[in-house]
Image (tube, rainbow, N blue to C red):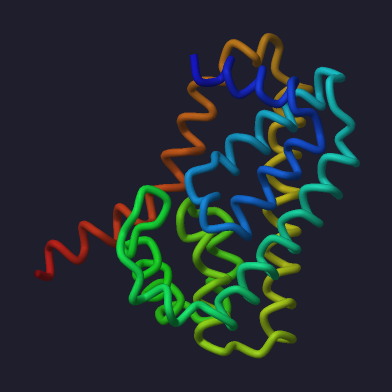
Length: 198
């Protein structure tokens, strides 16, 4: 079961492993497939059960997310333009980068905040910000806001539900499935809107 595997993964890698995954998803191209939202929610739940320290989880995840996005921004600013000429591979898909660029064009700086809650877009948005030559002071402001909302809100939700609902571990799978569904809903809606127009 997915929830069991995620729970065991977090117990195995610990806080440093969680921070590493958050950083990779935020700052490395290969991180786009990592389960950031469900990972932080489950880690928050495990904190409510005494397996992890909630304060360390939140602070470390926030730092890892902000640094990860900053690395993505620097990558985009320095070598990002060449990505649009790069062929698809197992770890890289042009469509993700193009989708992030379109999302960025539509929402501007707010993309850095909104992208925190959308898989794929989360990884590529800071790269597109760098490619678009967004000023770093502006970028870091949105980065800090988005990182705080995501790294505090998602683990705290897991912690809160784990603290007030008896046997919530039996509900982890549907809760995580709901989080994933809500996360991918905006791109799906956008895709369906485009198909209707086209």
